[in-house]
Structures are given as C-alpha cells and as structure tokens.
Length: 204
Image 1 (tube, rainbow, N blue to C red):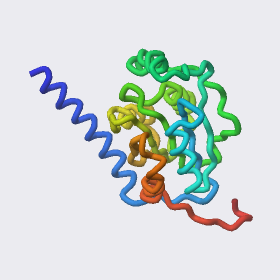
Image 2: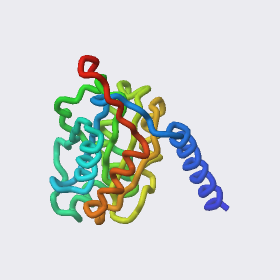
Image 3: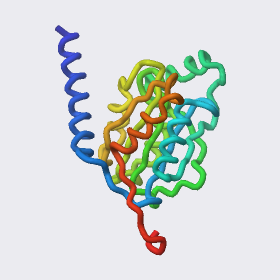
Image 4: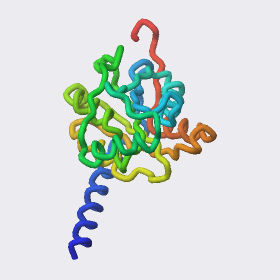
C-alpha cells in the first residue's frame, strides 16, 4: 500500500510539472534576436552537453556561457560518478566560478543545459540556479539535458522546483551517444519552442 501511495504522489508531481510547462508553450515563444542566452555545464571539453549547447546557440544566434565548478570533477568517468553521487542524491550544491560576461538583465529567454547525473541535474547547475533565482523571476527558461539512456528522470521536476516564479518551456532529453549524428533533433527542439524575431539594428 505504501508503494502505491508513493507512486501516486510521484505521478501527481510529474503531472503538475507537465501541466505547468505545457501551458507555457502551447506555441513557440517569440523573442527578439540578441535576447536569448544558452548556459550549460558539461563534464568534459568535448562533452555531449557542450555539443548540444553549441548547436542550440548557433541555431538561435544566442550568446553561449559555461558553468564551471571551482573544483573540477575527476576526468575519470567512474571516479566522477562517485564524486557526484552524494551531491546529486542529497540535492547539494557545488561551488562554481563566476560566469564570465553573463548579465541576465540582457536576456528574455535562457536555455539551461546539464548532463543527467544520478537522475537529476549536475550540482554546478543547481548552484547557478540558486545563486541567480531572484534575477530569473519572470524570465522564460528552457531546460535541455543529455543522458546515457536514463531519459528525463527527475531532471525537469527538480529544475522546476528551483524556479517557481519563472516561465518554463517543456524540457528536452537527448541521448548522448547519438547526439552528434542527430544534430537535426537538437535543431528541431529549438524550432518547436523558440522563434527569433529580427529587429532593426538601431533598436538592439
């Protein structure tokens, strides 16, 4: 019985999250060119999340920013998993470096990228969101994540919990191993959610 109740509560939580995001994106959001930013954390210099972020930024003509941990995770995959496990399962933060050049007031739509670690977002992303939550109120945000086969899991739900006063577009999960051979999927994700409006140069 306890399992049934827990399952029902979890389902209710997911439904609440999807109701919110789907309502916010009945059709693509329109934004002026230059008012969109992509910010991401990627485990390695040639990581899947980095590739997704670069592809999205190029498609939108958006500014690209990287979240970096003060103390980088191990470059050895299994060691990195061990380092991050406690942080992820405990929803703890990991100190990050200042994101160079990012002034949130300049952007109306912000896409946030993270790998799926232990069913949730990477701790440096959680840190960045909490640090900037006041400035993100009322803005439109869209989460994208890469994973090794786990799908969305709790990433979208946990993201929404940290941003109760933001407008959230439906999140997207990309399978990391095939993302480079399927860049069209990333571009479709962008086109389904955001339309960029050209504005005269003097008004930018």
